[in-house]
Image (cartoon, rainbow, N blue to C red):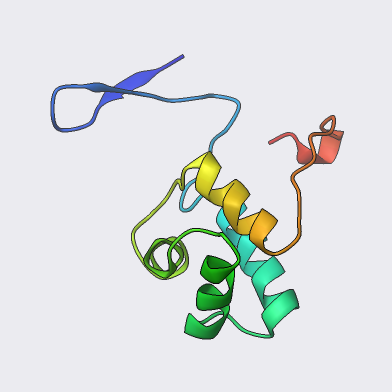
Length: 98
């Protein structure tokens, strides 16, 4: 496993099995779910998710429109559950392996 310095002298752990160039793919998955459920991404959808027990509207703005690259797993889970969804683990298909 490779490591690189983060600018504060600490090493950041890089996972070879989970690499992406821009934002975490889960952000795009959540964006698609929100668009399916609410019609568009915006404050109204974020407020409804927050009211249902999801993360704050500020967190979601930062995921979709801000600088957040890797949201916390607990926040992602809360967002999905607030929309009545659950995560499912399954084996990777050959097409899923990069």
